[in-house]
Length: 444
Ligand code: UDX
Image 1: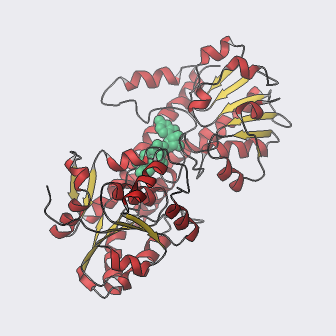
Image 2: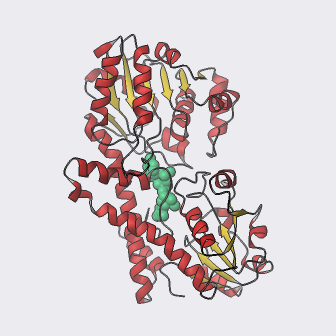
Image 3: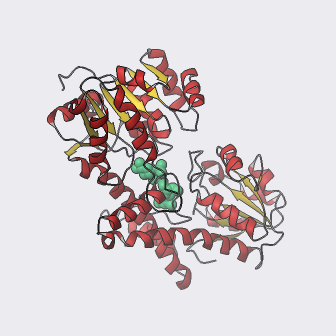
């Protein structure tokens, strides 16, 4: 239990991470001010609208606004006045033309907030950054704020998964507090008191370790996925079955079955760019060799996309020119409308480049997909996308696609041929309904 009074919280950046954090903190009873430069986003959130798809979050936002604890602004001066603890939740995308992380937004928000920090307070980084960033930001904030060294910096990496953001925020597997003083740790313990009181384990450490934990975790997850996908490549040339292989490995509790699902591989706003930025940073630090294997992890992952196109081409009889292909899925994973580095859309794009006539359908990501890939064709339903298709390819494993009735789908397609890019369909059921079923790493 903590004796520190409840800190007032600001959350800088209201994307997937920041909006979820702000909303959950308000529901937990804290006074929270969410800040973003995007006025439209701030207005939507203030009206009670979540500007992206995240299950359970709209209900939580309404609950948070009802408490009266949560408000939003574009004004950093107001944030400086309001907050005892300021969370930095802005994005760190991949730089154009480089594998490194773009720190413009993180540095920008810290630099712009600093002049408004006039009393003792804590600035807490949550964004994923290259190791060493926090110590640089400490100097940046202290040099530019009237409160000087009264402003401390801490790092509290966020591990939330899209689609499970609320649960991951309220009941995380662990919390990591990267701090430079006992006072900073006290503030973090006060901010997360309800989460810690529920028994969440905490690792208190230095700033560099806290920064590194996040990229190390994502690198491990990416490696596990590419490991099983590398096994799929071996299965493909040996006639072995990667799904049976993965199931057999999963029973070994030292290995475990999570993130061991073979298929089209990983995408999204985190895993791909985080492993690239990690390699880039390690090379800068002279330890590039230690993480060089992550280049292989990335390469294996990208090969899955090309190999999926190969399977569709094979099913189409050797050429995709003029072939109608039904692409089921656009989001980088189910339960998300996020299309950043989405394997599904990459495959759809490659199919089109080879002359296929693609029709894409996704339950939630259509608007984002249309904006990013206006040249692809889109359908309003599974049936419409499949209508007249020579090949159906499953690219994102939404439950809606898992439960497709292959007999019903057979009625609208031109050829009963399905490529299961996510090992999400029951091969036997589809074959019994007269379909040719193909999946990466499984015998045809
Ligand atoms: C990830 C991390 O899980 C999270 O802790 C971190 O904070 C942000 O990055 P997220 O990007 O939301 O979260 O997605 P995640 O559920 O981890 O999936 C990542 C990708 O891996 C998806 O494209 C998914 O389809 C793919 N994946 C996952 C596989 O290909 N196989 C698997 O076995 C598991």
